[in-house]
Image 1 (cartoon, one colour):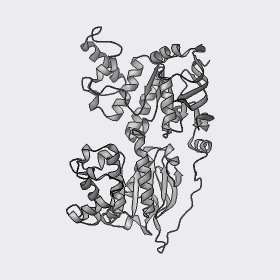
Image 2: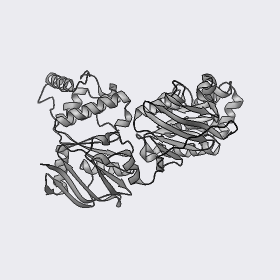
Image 3: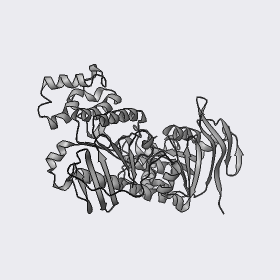
Image 4: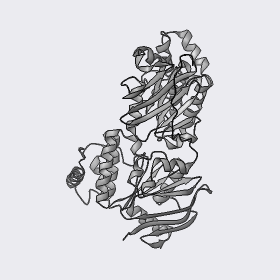
Length: 463
C-alpha cells in the first residue's frame, strides 16, 4: 500500500504580491518519484524557496504524512526532511569534503576530525566515489560536487530530495554515473522530486510528471505517457516536426547554407532539414550524446553513418577542413572558459575571430579603430583596452557574440548558448543572435534548453 509523504493542495506562491504559481496540487508518495516541468526559472525558484521553508505560501494547505500542518510546523519538517540539489551548489568551497558532509550534524567538539574523516571515507566508498576527503570542495569536478550533495542528503537522513537542472551540466559519462548513484540512493529509501526548467532526461525516473504553464498545472502524465512527444503536445507552443522533409540540394540555391539529408547514425535517425541565410534552426537533443554527435559532424571530426550533409550545396565531407573552419563559426558550451583569451584585452579578443578571415587585423591599428567604432553601441569605449578577465560578465558575453557579428561567418553553430547559471545573460545572447540573422548569418543552435523556444524565434526540431 502506498504511503503519502507530502501533499500540497490549492497552493499559491507569490513574489512581491504577484502570484507566480496558483492552484497547485501535488502528492508525493514514499519511493515514488515525482517530476515537475516548470515554464520558467522564476517558477522553479519560487517553488524551491517554498520547499526549503523560506517562502510562506499566499494560500492553500500543506500535508505531511497525511496530517494537515501549519506553515510554521512545515518549516521544521522541511528543514529536517527535505534537501535541495540544484545547478548552484550549496557546498562551502573553503571547507574540505568531510567538513561539508558533517559540519551541520556533528561539530568537532562532539566528534573528532579523525572520526569524521573516517566516516566520510567509508560513506563515499559505499557509493564508489573516489575522493580524498581532506581536499577542499573547490577542487572537485561538477559531478563530484553533485554526488557529494546527494550523499550528504542521505547522511542527514533526508526523506525527499528536490533535484533540478543538474544533468545538463554533465557529460555523457558523468550522466551515467549520476543515474547509477540516484538508483543506489533510491534503494536507500530516498524519494526524489525532480523539478526541471528545460532538461527532461531525469523524468525517466518519475512515476508522475506535472507540467506547468502560465503558473498552473496543465497536465499530469503517468507511466508510459512520460515521454518527449507528450510533453511537447502538452506545452503546445513548440513547432514539433514529426515527419521531416527530405531536401534535395541545388547548386544554384545560394541562400541555402546547410542541409542535412537523411542523416542517420547511432543516436540519430533520418535527420533532414535545411538552414537558409539569415534564419535560425534550433535542434533540441534528448541527451548530451546526440549533441556531441552533431557537433562532431559539423566540425568534420567524423562523417554520419548514412545520409549526407551539404554546406552551400557542396558535400561537407569533400570540403577542405582548413577552408571550412575559416567559414564556419563555433560557440561552444561555457564559452567564457573555453573561447576567451583571458590574458588579452577586450579588443584583442574581438579581433581574434576576424583575423582568421582577414590576416593582420590583430596587428593593424586601422582595423582595431574600426572595430571600436562598429561596436560603440554594444560595448562602452572604456572597456576595449581593459583585460577581459576584469570586465563584467555582460561585457564578456557581448565579446563572445560580437566577434562573430563582426566576422560574419557563412555559418554559426551554437552549442547550448542559453545559460542556466546566469539567465540574465540570455537577453544579451538573444539580442545578438537576432542581429546576426539581420546580417544574413545562418545560425544553428544545438541545445537541451526547453525554455529557449520561447526566448528566440526559429524553426524547432526535436530529436
